[in-house]
Length: 592
Image (cartoon, rainbow, N blue to C red; front, side, top):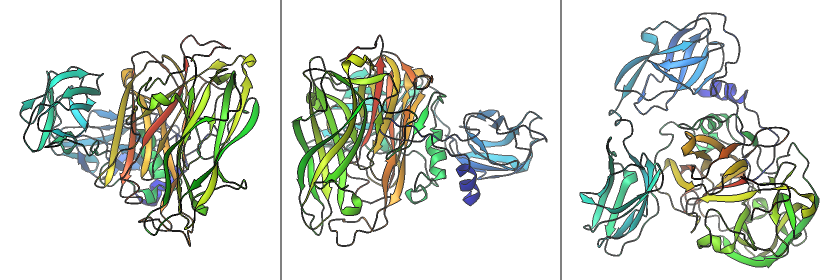
């Protein structure tokens, strides 16, 4: 597709100056929302397509050349119209191929003038095996993916069409205690088995899942797991991290099209790393600093690290108040900013609120939820949080805060830093409408990290049953280097897209004299921002209305091997933090 594609898509990329929870930009690509860019004037003609073949599962990016494409209203592969296309000019458009069966079809373009005539120039051939019947289960991951030969391992299976599964087999042996958790997840107990690796298959009335590396389970004498196995997402030919710097146009198209979701016209994006909101932050601004924190010196082979260190009973800006905005930073004790450029890496920080009635919806009173309600987090992208006017996160009169941090040092000597947070707040007498934070991650009640293997595009998923019905106000995500995007959708509402957080990348600065960088070369792309989504401001509707019991899924997409080969496979994360206005919330409420 080359530079024409990059220039064309870049010409329609726009980022709204909006601020909020973590930080992403949704790109308005003409055609991807079925919006024509102009009026048609001549009959469309297709003269060539490239590539002219692809998988029966669809999803190939196809360049269509010809004339009369202005104002295109649909593009079809045979009789199947695709909702994902982008008109670049009167003579060029790009389209995602639809799923199809083995054989050759004609690609046609329709405008208000008519539909292009078919010819040998527009033919597209589907190759590979025939997809299974509609409704057949699929398995995209199993966790853990290993256990003891004696059986009894509780295994969570993620995929599709899992709500009406009648049997789950580990090789030829049936599992027991099948419990579906919606259409995309189920739990089952492994049977006894012999040493070695088997495929897990799920069966319902439509058929059995197709075997793949994603469904494999390894029996050992001691049990254990290597974490959820990866699965293919974009496939061969997808852009690499190096072509995604600063949200490169090709990655914006792929990331923001989000296959297999329903588009959401209520999504408004805001840029990462200090984006300016379209509204003024409410209330008093207080700058809070916690430290000094000493980070050990780096060695010749590893960075100095403080890993998941808690700080409890930390200073707070207010009590019986509403938090309306937060802006993080990492500083040296003299107040100057500590960053990768100076050898300090702000890996992550998570904030918890504990108080009467406070509970973490994603993990109530167990695991990570024991620390309290997770209400804010950031990494080196330093994502801003800002609620629209009239809304706030309530802090009770007797609440206490704690935090958990991981910081890294690439200097040959120890350094002292402070975690800083600029916080806007108003007293409870302001009677704002309260929001409820909801934390979603791969292991929502355990370790936030997992490992990947291999190379190429891989997807990490988690599904949560919503217990906070109400209006979704703002949401954003966090991934590690190598992460292209992370998005959330409501599976129950026809996979309604809730937000798509896309990483922006910049090369690492010069690190002369620094140590412990391992395999990361100078100039390696690192994440410098990730965008989020917001609604409910200036008369705009909320992002979505979420119902009790809705199945909410997150999907973290990594291009493994494109960034630092160690950093993008070990201990990676896929996290989204949502703020919901609970059903029945009123101004002056707490909704704890």
